[in-house]
Amino acid sequence: MVPLVSSVPDESAEAVPTALPPEVVQAAEILAGKRIVMLTGAGVSTDSGIPDYRGEGAPVRNPMTFDQFLASESFRKRYWAGSHLGWRMFDAARPNATHLLLAELEEAGVVNGVVTQNVDGLHTRAGTRHLVDLHGSMDRVVCLRCGQFYARSDIAQRIADDNPGVTEPELVRMAPDGDAAVAEYESFVVPACTVCGGVLKPDVVFFGEFVPTEKFAEASAMVSAAEAMVIAGSSLVVNSGIRLLEQARRRRLPIVIVNRGVTKGDGRAALKIDGGVAETLTALAPLLR
Image (cartoon, rainbow, N blue to C red; front, side, top):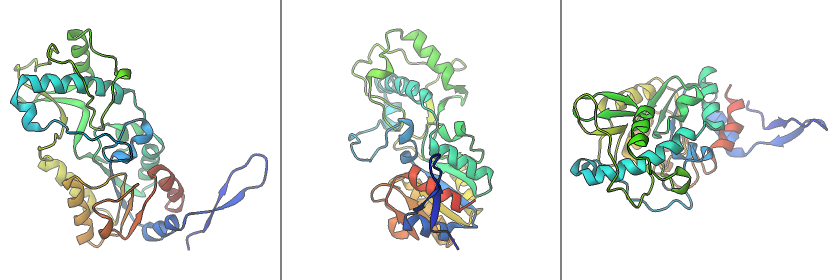
């Protein structure tokens, strides 16, 4: 039977019983004893200072599409100028309590893996080992012609050397995909592949670009190996997330969604918790270990 109270340490008094929210107790009853696959979205990284796409106060954005990026040097200058500033802020971000908690739950055998829609690399930095970065990661750069990969830190240094007047990141607004708004970019020097001279692109899925088949297969295999699914911090607007949710639903896995606001999967979940990811998972985790 799941306990209805938890103890809060108090150095000056005896432990005070604190009632758990009923939805947390219900989630524990649904998930206890099951291997859980986590699907995470932008709401997991907001506590690390990275904004989400659709949360309260999020600006309306029209992100650059893959076709635009390929279309002209001017678009690539615009993208790389903003992405360079965004990367510097991503690189300074640190894993928050949710990232660390999920790594601990994986170590304890409660979570069998994490599929993330985020490109910030924070799950990796927190220590998650079984991770599928469904939309790629900003810390890698790939040549679209020859396939050569580069560390983003090396490309960032090249950009800084070639563009000494680049705006400091503290003066720009970052987006969840690592982009940032820039006003002047026509003089920006775009990095090229040192192997073949081809176009370089951060190893992330742009709008209008498909998730690589092998990536989705890895995520699908993780869902197949699980006994339950928890979706945290995602509104499930992106098709890849809905496809994984539907796979879990067809396998009759119990699905719990934790997100502030409506998601496209609410009607297919065994339980939807409308609340913050960090506080909900922090309360839930001790009941699952």
